[in-house]
Amino acid sequence: MMKPAIKIAPSILAADFARLGEQVAEAERSGADRIHVDVMDGHFVPNISFGAVVVEALRPVTRLPLEVHLMITDPDAFFDEFTAAGADSFLVHWEGNNNLHRTLQRIKASKKRAGVVINPATPATVLEEVLPEVDLVLVMTVNPGFGHQHFLPTTLPKIRRMRETIEQVKPECELELDGGIDATTAPLGVVAGANVLVAGTSVFGDSKGVAAGMASLRAAIQATAN
Ligand code: DX5
Ligand code: ZN
Image (cartoon, rainbow, N blue to C red):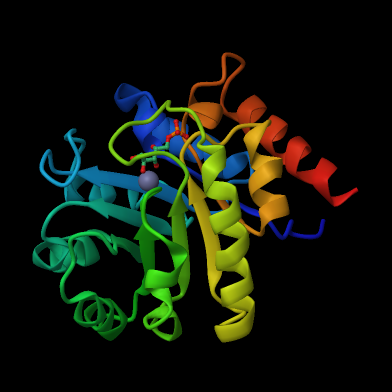
C-alpha cells in the first residue's frame, strides 16, 4: 500500500491518560505517522499538561517519531531533558522567543528536527528569515492551550500564503496544522496546502474508538484527492 502523502499526528492531550500507552499503540496500528506531545507550563499558555516523563514513558511503546510541541516560556531550558527522554522533533513558538534562530540552531545541533509554530494572530511573514533553518512550520488553527476547540477558518488564507512561501524558499519543509482538525476541517487545511495534521479529539475522542477516528480522518482527506 502506498504511504499517503498527508501525515496524521494524533495529539495525546485528548487521550485517556490512564491508558496512554495502549492508546498510542492503537494510534500506531491505525496508521498514525507521528505522535504529537503538547507540553504546557501554565505561563506561556493558561494550562498545565505534562513534561518529559511522559515522552520517556512512551518511547518504548511506539516506533513512531515523538514530536514535542513546547508551549512553555523557556523552551531552551528543557531541550536536553526531552532529548534524553527520546523526543525526535521540537516545535517551538515564534511568539515570545527573542532568540529564535539560536533556539533552532540548538535543536539542529542535537540532530533533532526543528519546527516553528505561529499562533492565529501572528502573520506568516514573520517566518521569512528563519524558514531556511526549519524542517517544519506549524500554523495553529486554534489559540494554543486547550484541546477540543473549534478550527478557526480565518487561518486558511495564511495557510495558503505559507504554502506559497515554502514552495519558493524551501519546498521540503513540512506545513502542519494544529487545533480543531476533524473530518470536516481536515480537507479545508489540506486544500489550503498543509501536509501534516495534528488531531486530538477527533482521534482519541471518537466514540467508536481510535481506529474509527483515524479511519474517518483518512477518508475525509482521501476525498480531497479525488
Ligand atoms: C492546543 C494543542 C493541540 C491540541 C489539539 O494547544 O497544541 O495540539 O491538543 O487538540 P484538538 O485536536 O482536540 O483541537
Ligand atoms: Zn499541539
